[in-house]
Each structure stands twice: as structure tokens, then as C-alpha cells.
Length: 313
Ligand code: TXA
Ligand code: MG
Image (cartoon, rainbow, N blue to C red; front, side):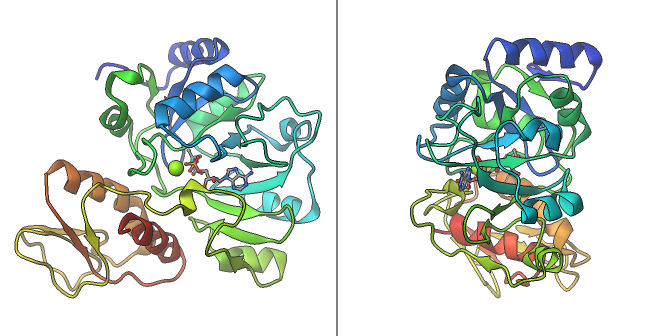
């Protein structure tokens, strides 16, 4: 497909050239696809906000190849080092205190004293980051408030011709955005994701709070309507209305018209991987309404329910 580029040395060089000119491309990660730009460049960061129609106050996550490159930009504390050892590269985003000497554009972190950082594990984005001499600001590649893309063609579905370079990394393995944890002040989860509070608790050996409402920091992942397919969603349904899309979970549901099973095996990781794909599919099939059964609220289910709650607002 036009504008979608397979992972090859030639295409990685092309991606690098575009990024060096402070232009924006779409990239794969193991969580969701993102829009990537040079985090040192005000102009690249501005282009990201404009494309996403994202409020300027909502800061971006800075993506690094390794911890070495991070030392210039943030103070690394004990809790960070423990979590990094266990979960990075991977689907955990850390909020750390930004260094004054950091070259990260203050537009990328909404002029805050902190920055969000992540080390993605997807091979394609790692290959790209390794060959750049600047970290990348990468928010999810959706127009603000809508469903995040989990494959290359979803990005085109979101942006059409406004994005002319999508690096293809196949389908995102996890399918939901990373867990965001604040390590700058009170330790707490700002956005649930693939790494569960329980797993974090085991490493830090203390109870981990999940923040309900953001106070000062305006997280889009925490704002009112988000992750929305643009049609009403009803949660905790036992059955669906005539002609509604019915999202189900587990083996007790047989294949039926209008039924979309997130995981026939009843596996929450599989359901997480299928959630955005299913919402996008239902939207494109022009359904008017979605009903969804109750999803168990543990492990990946916590992240799924978080996204569904916001999508249903
Ligand atoms: O999995 C992911 O994290 C994906 C992939 C592409 O890496 N990225 C992603 O980025 O989800 P985005 O921009 O859609 O979400 C970033 C989240 C938002 O909720 C934002 O408010 C929060 O991180 N965030 C960023 N910087 C922050 C900061 N300094 N303090 C608190 N929250 C911050
Ligand atoms: Mg997002």
C-alpha cells in the first residue's frame, strides 16, 4: 500500500533522513503505532501536536534506545532503576524529573518539570532509535480522542494523506498503550497498561496506587472522552440490542451475527491485543452502537476496562 514501508535497511535510512529534517513519520511499537518526531526539535514536536489535534498541555512520551542516552535528560532514581531492570525495554513509561540541561523541547513535555520516558522493545523501532543521535517523541498515532492504531494500515485510516511515511512493523503485539508510572513525587500509576500494578508491586515491594483523576497534569489518557470509536458504547451488558455490535469475551459465546469475541479462550492478553482492532472494525462496519460484556478486572483487564470506561463517556 502507498506510504507504507517495509522494514529494510533502505527504508530505515529513509525514515532517518525524514526525522533528521524534523518531519514526522509513523512507527510501530509493541504497544500501539505512534507518530514519531525529533524530541530536540520544537518544529518537529509542533508538527506532531498539529497532526494529532492534541491539546498543547498534554505531554508526549520520549522514546530511547537505552538508559545511556537518558542520563543527559533526566534524573534516574532507585525505583526507576529497579523497574527498568525488570521491565525495559517494554511497555512501561516512567515519569522522571527532567534535567535543566536537557535538550528535549519544552513543548514536548508541556513545559513541566518532569518528562515521560519509555524504551520500546519492538525490533523495528529499536533499529531506528539505535541509529539516531536524538530520542524520539512518540504519542500514539491516532487523532486525539479516537482509537489508537495497532497496524500500519490503521495509521492511514486515521490520517490519510497527511502521513506519507509509515514504517511497517506488523501488528502490535500488545495492542494497548504502555503503563504510565509517576516516579517523580508520589509513586503511582497514571495510566494502566500491559504491566499490571501487581507486577510493579512485586518489584518495588510496596502498594501501588492507581490515580483516578489527574490534578495538575492533564493526561489525555485520563481526560474525559478518549479511545473512542465515535459511537456510543454500553458496558457490562448481558445481551445486546437488535443490530448493535456485541463485544463478548470467552468460550461461552458462540459465533453469531453481530458478535465480536475479544478472546474465545478467555485470555485477557489476547483480548487486550484485539480491543482496538475490534473497535476500529465495528466503526468501519458502520454500526450505530456497541454493547460489551463485563471484562474481568485483573491484570490486562484493568487496562482494558480503563480504556472502555473512557471510550464509553
Ligand atoms: O504505549 C505507548 O505509550 C504509546 C506508544 C506509541 O509508545 N504512546 C502513547 O503516547 O500512548 P500518548 O502520547 O498517546 O500518551 C502519553 C501519556 C499521556 O497520558 C500523557 O498525559 C502522559 O503519557 N504523560 C506524558 N508526559 C507526562 C508527564 N510529564 N507527566 C505525566 N504524564 C505524562
Ligand atoms: Mg494516546
